Amino acid sequence: MTALTKPKIFDLPNRLQRQDRQPQSVADFVLIDPYKFLEYSNLERLFDKLPTGLPMALNKAEKSNRYYHKWQVNEFSHFTPNHKKYIHSLVFDLDPTANDDNWSVWSDCGLPPPNLITANPIKPNSYQLWYLLEYPVYTSKAHIKAWLDDIYVAMRDLLNADKFFNRTRCKNPFSPEHDTYVSGATPYSLSELSDKCDLSLSATYKPYQPDLPLSVTITPPKPQTLAIEPEKASNDPSLYAGRNDETFDKIRFVGYSNAHRPIDELYNLLLNACIQYQKRFDTPLEIRECEYIARSITRFCVEQYGKGDFKKTGQYSEQAKLNFSNKQRHIAYKRWQGYKDKRTQALALLADGIKQTDICKKLGIGKMTLHRWKKDSKNK
Image (cartoon, rainbow, N blue to C red; front, side):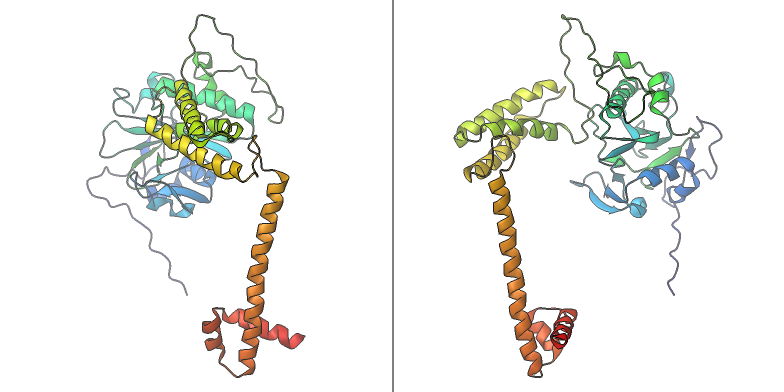
């Protein structure tokens, strides 16, 4: 009989007293016990929308997130809430110096109350505001995703939130290391959020008709701008991986079409392209980071193009695919040929009366493999 696990209790010292009650209104925020998150509808909904394999980190200092089961969410301080294929929540990071009172800034700028607020207990006026979406937005629906991005930019500007917060390392509202406040507000639809912010003030705004079905592909008209208006730098908030990833993804095609050039010439070409591409960002990457990106693309282009298996378009040729298949077939043949030799040797040792344990140790095989070989030989 398996013993039941002892329920966890929030007993951290020098922390605010948890409130054992439910929110009474949309703007009533309750400081909750993170181990009792299933008792609150907003946290229960957020947990339900989290992917089963959840990227999490024990602390902010970790270099990267690692995947764990989402039921371990109480043990990690930071995580990535949204899935790569769909977005179910909007998170805004408010630094202590962003506003005089980050707690109520949403009310001052006319936005609805957030569903969740996570606070840093040792850093005053440092909050993350969470807005849960009524229906997840799938990234494959380009027209809906573009509308969501416009809403996010408009809300971010109203809240004066961090522009470079890419939402891959959020404060975990299920963690006892943060103070989590839950409101009585229900998840919002995109129409409700867009009504509270003037999207026409956003540089990335595109007119959109939300009443059309999701299956319809819409090509929204480009907004008209004055000829004298200068082009504003954009950090493209729809990209969740950041400036490095976008720069690499765009500049690599320059390398594919110039892979025939000498290596030094190719590297200089890519480096200049990376540096020029930084003009579209509010805060460009450092030269050192551009050098890393250019060097990585150069190495790939030289290695692949030198073999003659890589077209200038960046697509593998039919001959390259055939070579790969032949290589995999050769590896499989070598592997199974080796097993054939081991099988013959194992059956010979069994016939000589050698113990099965000794045979397994000598040949490096499992007992079930040996048992299967023995059974197959008898059936023949």
